[in-house]
Length: 112
Image 1 (cartoon, rainbow, N blue to C red):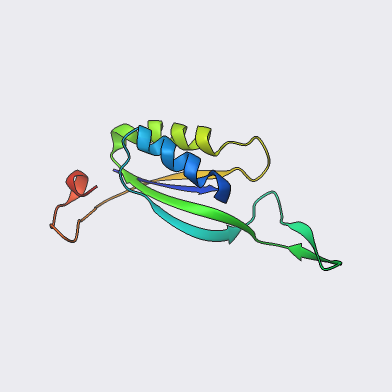
Image 2 (tube, rainbow, N blue to C red; image 1 turned 90 degrees about the vertical axis):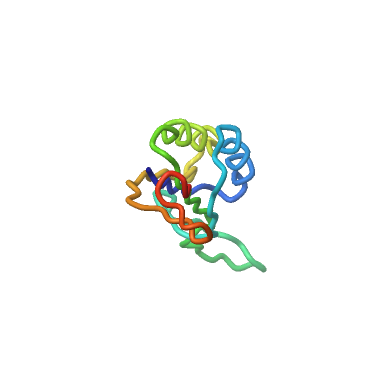
């Protein structure tokens, strides 16, 4: 089992959700986060005054899947989140040791 974390632009969330649903992913956790990478933030103008925005709004997705679907999931997220501009995001894949469904007590792949 793996857990896939993806950091994407907020306006791409619906596209990514549709893409992962098409490959059979049934569950996802979404968090609104802020951060920066190579973008290093940007300058905005508000009521005539310029100010620096250091942390940009992003969306973090956490998706637990079986090993056999990881490559298709990563591909689906990459294609759906792509804009070709800086700040498209990153995808991280981690090993997932154990999953337990609280309601039923199922463990491992059955709990996903």
